[in-house]
Image (cartoon, rainbow, N blue to C red):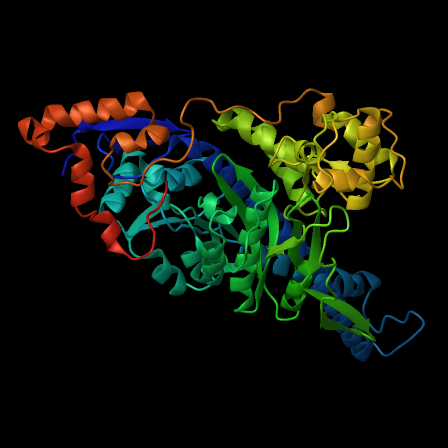
Length: 589
């Protein structure tokens, strides 16, 4: 069946081109170019790292096999040549040296070369492919990649994906294959079969996590997106708990907490199969969170999971928060004993403002980035600037991440601290200087331009703010107000606001852009594929797009569409795509 190109729009992104039907049949969101570029950058770094690890393993095996062979040859030589003091027993020294030295080296080299051929190109699974744009970009742009398997349970999406594979030529047809199947069933039936698994669903990825952690090979890479930010950020805490097993809190750090909730959920699913995760990069961009983790199998290492999880106590009156570890470990002789965490870490009432605490979690409180990976990814992106359509954005995000404190969970908001005290806000440079002068570490956050990560305790933070208010007086407030209670106490630490050289990060000192505006209007989530566009979607698409679509429908439908309003059509007709499954498993591109 031939394709009439007049019915399609050709969309080019990177080195891939896809045909998108003028009707909203298959989901596509231009804003996800940031997501796809970041995934390609991480995938390139993973392939390079995977090769380095394989080379190191082979080198270790070669040295090990060489030592064993030398030992065997030495013992054999002693049996064949029992004479001592250099007697050659009919053999020359030259012949003897070839047997004892060159033999093991040649055998080790042969073993090394044969094992070197064992590293196959990584197999990639895109569990929810839609148009197949992501899979095509992987196949065309990532050097050294193997087979890319694109799945979808929607016939229209699979048809579109297969059409786009053919449209992109021989390279794509030889590397990318598309299947109509439920991603969960496919992943469960292929355990540890894929080196890379990419989950990018429309909404929550929770229903795919259990099968995804089983399908990733040991040391493989799991890439996962969650777009249900309202749920993860605390708008519906009970829904978040049912999907991810953690209760969110409405703090200024809610987007980073969303990242940590997702990581904790993936770790929980992995632990059921004696596996655990190691995060290499965790990003909050645009309207979603995206995590990149490596999955390993180890029953002993899995026992460390409680040490990586914590509950969060958030004061309802001020910005103070405290973390309570789920577990702890004690060394015992040559082993380690695992015990429950000691708590509570806070009293019933906040020691700063006297209000109660809300408790959330558990969240992932271990590092969410591997700084070595971040540096490698960033340098790779800069070296291939022309191959990333969203270079400016992902470079800015990676630069900010590279300067974050890796071992400090969550962050404070400078404006929120000032709002609690009803005072003018100090500049970020002054506040950072005060923290550094107090002998603590401080950094920014890629999640929030006003976010401040620091290992300073809340007592020091409030002392700094008390000293600031003394120099910048405020109007009297109600005695019961949290800010009044905090300011009623004298600071135990005298803050030093003199400018410190470390108050600006390297990127700030070089005036590198770190937080960029959206490139165009309505840069955000889009409606699900198959939904009829109505006036309710103005906030997502904009007036021009909605009006243009509605006018086009009226011209095609004629008088029949004028008999009943467009809104009534949406309310009355069943949504066939939504009836395909009880869960929201429609995919993004």
